[in-house]
Image 1 (cartoon, rainbow, N blue to C red):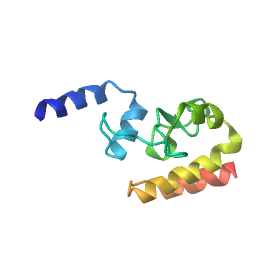
Image 2 (image 1 turned 45 degrees about the vertical axis):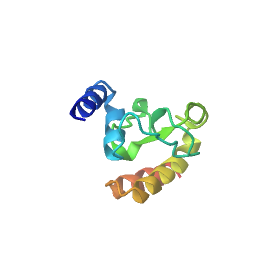
Image 3 (image 1 turned 135 degrees about the vertical axis):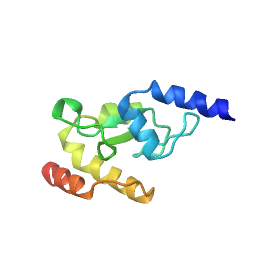
Image 4 (image 1 turned 180 degrees about the horizontal axis):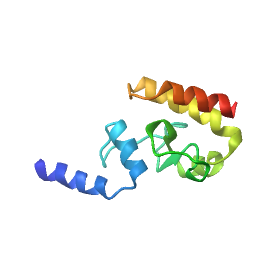
Length: 112
């Protein structure tokens, strides 16, 4: 059992920082089914809602799991930012993941 945990930690330490933040916030491990926050299908991309090129940060408020198709369709498009932020906020609330409500309020207001 200890080996499995060590192996999981080894793989997580090799993940990108934003993926680590997301996995830790939701208490996911590598073998878990991680659903898309939009469709509930198997998520494969941890998406920066506000892209890094637009000063999006590596913080749980700005990270959501999507399918590849959803990522291509909805990612980095200003028209969907408020929608994605609102869906993600609800997911954090439902899962009792701590987050900064003021951050969400500011960003949702900006993108509405």
